[in-house]
Amino acid sequence: MCVNCFFSREYQKKLKESTFGHNRFENRLTDYVENYLNELSKLISMDKCPCKHKYTTSGNYVKYTNDLMNCLKNNMPIIDEISDVLIKVYKTFITKSYKHAADLFWESISKFNLIGAPKESIMYIKSHFRARIDEKGIYNNIYDLFHPPFDKRNSIGNQRFSISGQPMLYLANSIIVLTKEVATIDEVSIAAFVPKHQCYYSSKISDVGNSISDSLVNLPGLFDAGSNVTFNDKSYISKIRRSILCELLTFPRKDKVDDNEHFVEEYVLPQLLTSLLIDNGYKGIIYPSTKDYSAITNYHRFSNYDNNIAFFVGYNETENYDQYLLDTFYTFVLDGSEKYTYTIKDFMQKYEYAINLNKRYNAVVNNNSYIILLCNTKRYIEDIETSTINGINYFDTREGKTELEFYLKLADELTALIIENIKSKTGAVI
Image 1: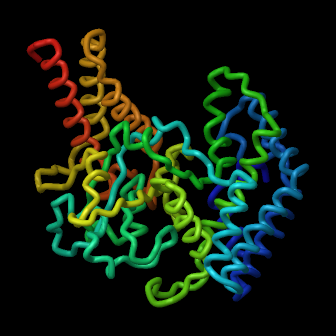
Image 2: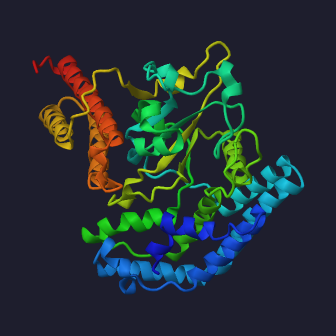
């Protein structure tokens, strides 16, 4: 296979699950790394791989991926080294203490530059979603769908990127992720959280996604557009290490037991990292979902529809919620007025109206933050509009129609803000 196939989430998940014959997690980790290196040594050029038609026909991209393949093969000792370090952190946790493991982990993070900065902040200015199980369907207050209140800490479960008893705000990039992580669409109430600009620019957010996979997905568009980006070995050393960290943090669970009643060995490393990020002033973490999305096809890999983001919640001695965090979002809930008959075309019409309105008055009033939100939403819809779930177009499913309802609410809200801004600055009648 080529590097594109090798770094796909589907293949890495399969490689990890091939180790499930081992009962001890430390042995599964070691076996995974051995298999990883063995398969890595067999990689072939993208132009000889059956998958090549999925990405780009650019000769520059073929050369880039070949350079990457050779870089990986030449740096297998680096992969082996960072894997050993991370496995040692886990073994330190189970043989010594949390403190010993945390100290070793942070020392390794600092030494090997393992914490990836988020991609350009503007890329994250889009809708995120949160759900709570609500069989009666009556949660329509945003606080019901915000982080767990401070006086309900005992209700906070044991999750991969979490700390027991500490409220966090978990958001998903799409509603389909919520149905995988929480419950079916009929069992939940849902809210949309859309970050305002300053929410990301003023926060330290750690992205633990696979930086190599992200690069492979992003580059074809650049090459097809005529870019002459060249491969740089040195810049990829950190990406190689971070990609290993991502894979070990998202190792699938072998045993399906109650999270709240059992020790979950696959959660040790991600929970250690979460605690360290909080201790060192970070405000959140972005990470890929580990659920099974094999039923979903025809989506653009750059959509990141299966990403999650967890915001760390600031404590308040008198209130039950972190109001400052809530105020950094536009928020939307389902209020019963939804039609579930809207189409992508309906959103695009609202988008075009807002864009043209902004163009007309932009010389006087700068509404770029609103337009960025709308443009990112449009791009995301285009990335997944051809996707299907079990053969059904995503936006024809209940999940997709619900998601589209939120996008229409966002378009209406931002258009109203643009009009209000224009009126207040120019006195124009719109």
